[in-house]
Length: 315
Image (cartoon, rainbow, N blue to C red; front, side):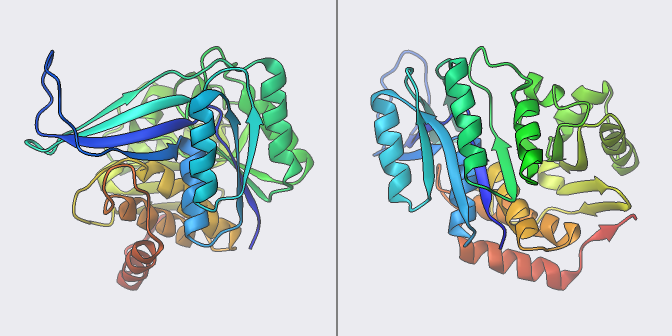
């Protein structure tokens, strides 16, 4: 199986808990918190590791929060390549409200990274000699949105495929041939093409447009509860979501990227890889709080979906 490296430029120490009701000005008595290392690429690496893949997580690490973060990530068994920084690793908080079942997610901005720290992170990714590089999550404050263009150039030099899952200016900056695969949400695609996309035909057309504008060779659009679609050279696929009991959505998108990339690293077809990614994302909904996908859930959901033959091929 091909080796994978993940890059997380803005990791977070994820804390999750529960309280009866979220109310302003009141002290909210919460349950014992669950504390885990998080951030887009960190979550992707943890899921890939849990699913049996070969992966190294590259990330900046600093301050007391960073020390705790690194220890917790080491405890998961994920191979890591932390890069020391002058700033302090951020924290985030997820609170589930018992009374309504609603979930509240509080996300802090994170530290600024110096140019030398950014260069160290990029070089740490390449030093691992991966076949796939996954850059996932938000950028730290003040970071040039074109950072992934630099990563693309470095990945190309070692023959690695770059998979990017990001948003905002960093996503917009992928135009003109940066990534091998990009996974925006439907809302993000609508923002990029400047129009609402009402149905499959319009959504496929928009994905083709992104390919034409050089965002990536492969465009995967996450449709949330409606599944996902994929557009590549000679291939267009639309897969429905896998229905599971609703749970915490934390890490669902990252789990999808992890499953998709791992399947590609195992030489599965684009269709099978997308289905495996959908299964991994659905499996994340079965776990509480910030807990990520379990391998047995992914395999069970994938096998059942494969048996149903639910894939729609438009190639």
